[in-house]
Length: 439
Image (cartoon, rainbow, N blue to C red; front, top):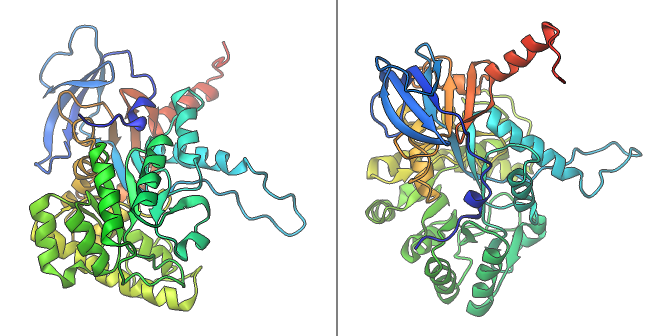
């Protein structure tokens, strides 16, 4: 029996009206060809039927003619660190109060929806901020994407615990590791994340050696899987990748050197383990901003030169590993490793060797499967939740359109229109016409 996802328990109310989305060009997220002249019936927040635009509108349904716009599943970020960060203040200015960051997290979550991202997996954040924001959404404070969280990242006592604030739960020895896993269950985690290696985003850790002992890893994976929870493994060096694969990690985060070990990729493919390449994280560490092409890009690095050079190397190796994984039959899920990074990550995955179709599948059905939500979201199929995205244009021919706010026409969450240009234009029209919005 699967564990109870706190993320699903926190879903907002489903749409009550019946919607008939007709005249769509349908990208269903499965990797199949785009289908023209499609229609989709939504009822009680669920996709009830995928039909044809030639069919009459079902009785009692509200028709919405998409006029050959593309209808897609809501996008998914399988690796982000949404936390909300209060801005730095000038010296002598009022300092940010303790609760200010939560308001910035709310703004960030709202913007995810505006980008068409309807589910995110937070692979480490400060304290219980994701759980707090999720609870606020559950009880109607605001709307944002579905939020899965690992609670705190489980790590051995290591330098990373000094760098990443309240993001880590350091544990040593099998018993302490097991307790740390159970603490995350208690805190409302949807999955468990473990640091099998150190992180190259700080200057004191070496990601090459395995950070945990075999006994510690056995305790962690055994306890998580026994309780029905998936395990996400931060694995940079090959020793950490090998151990994570052997112990049954459900997703490998980063894995930038896997191209050097075809045997490990073969093992991942055979076991159905998913790679989350996180190219945008390397772009950020290299100071590359919103660039896609690296050569000649303007850099504004925020890290020491040693880490910037490592980021360049990791990007080269990570892109090679993504391609090698694809060729070996390993499933790839999109994870940006940065805030609001899905549109750019899609373009970067394409730039570094995936086809547009492969990148969009990585951002929809494969990401959903990686999160253990493939039976609910990620594709446009009967019985799935109606988390949908309507865009102006063809996202396969022009993947950059997903980063253009004006071309995100409408985002539906559980059948409810929640974001997009159409809603904003309707509000502008109401205001310009002098309509009494207050009543």
